[in-house]
Image 1: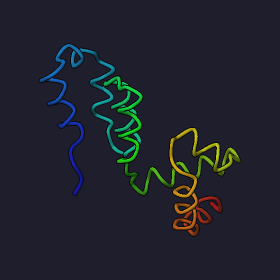
Image 2 (image 1 turned 180 degrees about the horizontal axis):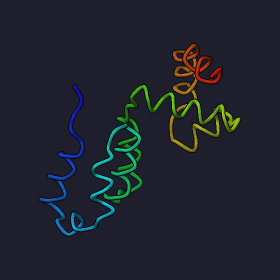
Image 3 (image 1 turned 30 degrees about the vertical axis):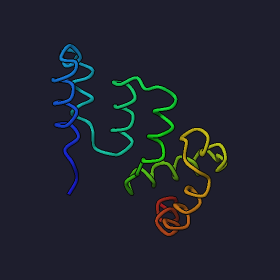
Image 4 (image 1 turned 90 degrees about the vertical axis):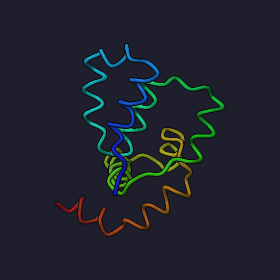
Length: 113
């Protein structure tokens, strides 16, 4: 079972910053919180964080399978190095390599279509 991020963020904004809920773009984004990537991007846009806070939060990030596959397919499609992906998305090279090994067969079938 997965948390209802739309409801969580709605309640947080309602309590802390109700003015943001009047923005149609924010309302639209709230409806589209389907993947981990969506949640992380929304959080980044809504709540400005300090560098220290970002570094601490980075250690606690988890990714769902759909997001992992999307990132690996993006890397393959654009022929990007693991180092580049690591820097761009702030994920360790070891983690990206582990994902690639874990989803090797799924990536082959996706590229074969």
